Length: 172
Ligand code: AR6
Image 1 (cartoon, protein in one colour):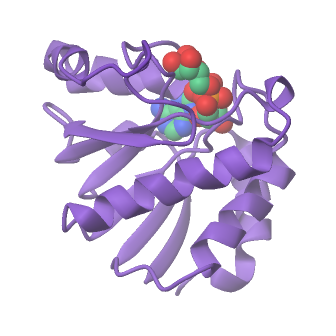
Image 2 (cartoon, helix red, strand yellow; image 1 turned 180 degrees about the vertical axis):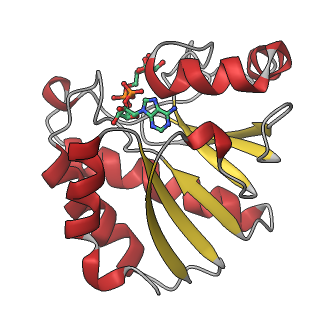
Image 3 (cartoon, rainbow, N blue to C red; image 1 turned 90 degrees about the horizontal axis):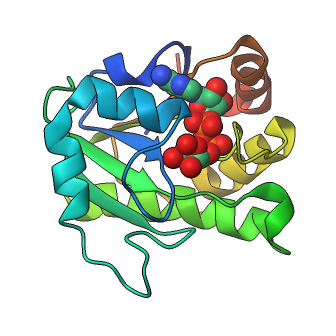
């Protein structure tokens, strides 16, 4: 599996699925979530509304759900919810679970390429250097039967932290 770290806007990524850093209600928001909904068009919101709610949540923290990508170049969106860093006793476990659930859902749907943003590293306040260590752990905990996992990072500091932190895993 090739691991790629790119700077840029994830809504333009040409992969089988892009991952959205959503919230448990899954009806849109700011940051990367807002950008993905704008680029995909209104059908994405409707598809999210159709996702079954359990205990009032469409996607509990650490889990993932899949929808079509509609107007995006990516055929699918995998919505996951990372932890609010200071609101839970076990943020690393929940962040790992968000990445792992997204990868597992991609595999279960026979997808081959996936692009992630820096989940929880925006308004949810996860320190980026700690987040990169969590990402490393999930990427290396098992063999993932995918062709490519890409990280598309929007700000320079986050991009550089991912590049440095995943240096030895990044393919040619
Ligand atoms: N492409 C790639 N990354 C982006 C883009 C983009 N177009 N736009 C922003 N980012 P955030 P969170 C980066 O706040 O911390 C939403 O309101 C951004 O710079 O989007 O998981 C949801 O609805 C940052 O590095 O997600 C939730 O309520 C990273 O994406 C809440 O925010 C994640 O920042 C989730 O918070």
